[in-house]
Length: 79
Image 1: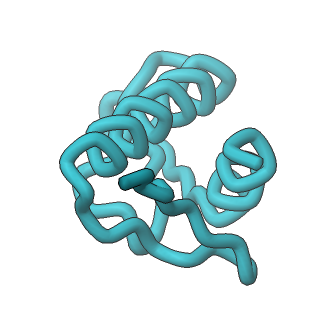
Image 2: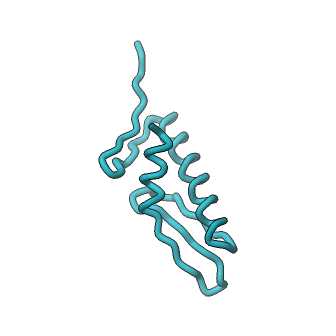
Image 3: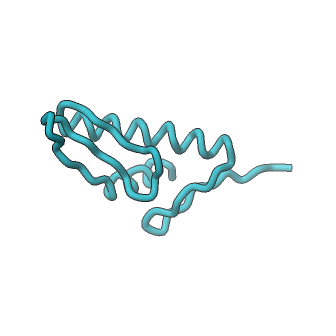
């Protein structure tokens, strides 16, 4: 489930080449999830890693996580 969610979120990533010729990437609706690397592939890898960390932190802290392409992540707490 989480892998499908991450794949869907990564499809929403946007990349650009900066003036210093590095690649910047971010994912819409995920505040603070961005990466800046010398190569596009490196930027993608770092962005995915940052997204994973962001998701784990948000789940542990019970923070809202955006819905992506109809997919939702949430923790079911047991009594």
